[in-house]
Amino acid sequence: MIAPSPERNDQEREDLIAMLASQRELFRFTVRGIEDDQARQRTTVSELTLGGLLHHIVKSERHWTTVVVERDENAKVDVSQLNSEYRMGPEETVAGLLEEWDAVAENTARVIRTVDSLDTSIPTPTAPWRPERVWWTVRFTLLHLFREISHHSGHADIIRESLDGANTSYQRAS
Picture (cartoon, rainbow, N blue to C red):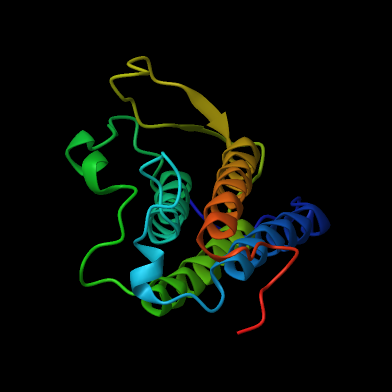
């Protein structure tokens, strides 16, 4: 399903890769300098933590690139994983998750560069909240991933500000 296409728009693909990298960098800036125990700390009434958000967006990016590649018309969201989706596991570290994200990002760039067409329609997994199969273009799926990262970068910024006053615009002196 993934093969270079002579008709592909290389500039659009590179723009998508660059924008995803830019959003990842904003999130990474927000978690810069925090310890693992801080990453697990709730700082608002929400259950969200910096580590939990990092865990989620790494898994989310891996999930959506898999959807693009596999195009499984029978795929379903594994609801048994939802309780841990926004939690940094006890064995996980910020450094480890960031390293994992680097590998996921490299794979995402490879998929974007080699997918047959950004206009190809692919099936998305069904879920209890969306039982009917929905088909998205590869482009829309990548834009959804972009939105996911940017959305959670905003959450991370608020959590980090509540933690120690730092955010994507300002880092406190140590």
